[in-house]
Amino acid sequence: MEEITLFSPLQIKGVTLKNRIVMSPMCQYSATDGFLDDWHFVHLGSRAVGGAGLIITEAMAVSPEGRISAGDLGLWKDEHIAPIRRITDFIHKQGSVAGVQLAHAGYKASSAAPWEGGKYVSTEEGGWQPVSPSATLLTDQKTYSKELTKADIEQIVEDFKQAAKRAIEAGFKVIEIHAAHGYLLNEFLSPVANRRADEFGGSFENRSRALMLVIDAVKEVVPTETPLLVRISATDWRADGWKIEDSVRLSAILKEKGIDLIDCSTGGFVAPKEIPIAPNYQVPFAEEIKAKIGIKTGAVGLITSAEQANEIISSGKADLVFLARELLRNPYFPQSAAHELGFDIELPSQYLRGKK
Image (cartoon, rainbow, N blue to C red; front, side, top):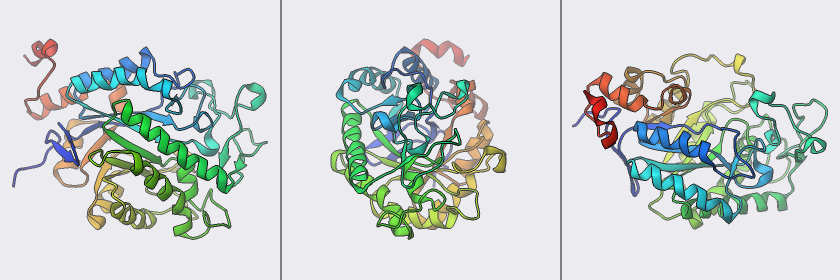
């Protein structure tokens, strides 16, 4: 059997990735009214030139109210499509694949950009009313998110569906549903944030219901050859929260529903200082889900070196490695990793001189 490495191609449904390196979604907080602009074009395009197999945009909000900040990208109206098409076309011309992360921020919506403090922005300050499965205290420690009604939930499911439809029209070949990091779908899953007493709260099945409805709605408008990914928080890192056992159980259900890969992150309801952050600290979650459920997984979390990334893939711990901060520091990580590991990869013609 041929050895699987960081630079082995991977076929998922009708899409083939040229290598196992993924640009993980990273918010830029730099959009106006949800529109992608030249910053995003250069940011995403340079990583495609750099050689990543899959480029996933930052979280694209399915509604204006679903944005983390006023600077988030969005897919809530048709006018968003044309600027996105420009960048998806460019990414594909570089031999990479363009993917999108669809998201709703839940009670973490209407926040300032991190470099502006990241706190809740009130309606008086130009923000909007956040929503969540259960009313939750916001970061100003004074106001609460609005608890969603069943009609509200139905509308959000429809928002995901329409955003997915626009994503396909915009040229994206991979769709990821964001159900991690304390945002809305993660809020439904976790007992930390979900204290509802109806069919969307209480039991594991009930807390999973909103995500299942979103998946079903998205599948109605997405071609069968389009890979569907779900990003989860494999653990809340809290004794009273979501645990890896829950993620294994959820992943089995997602596999049955036709989800192609679980993007295994963690956290969202605790401060980073409460998480044992170290190189590969989240890889065991991807490894356990892959081993127990037999579904493809993506590993994240302080993956910063070529050897480290290659070992994760070659040892079978995960099928893809999602790089974030390392790709901020070095958009050409795939090229430098190939050089370091001794792989001969295809480069843009304009960069061939860099091989020598």
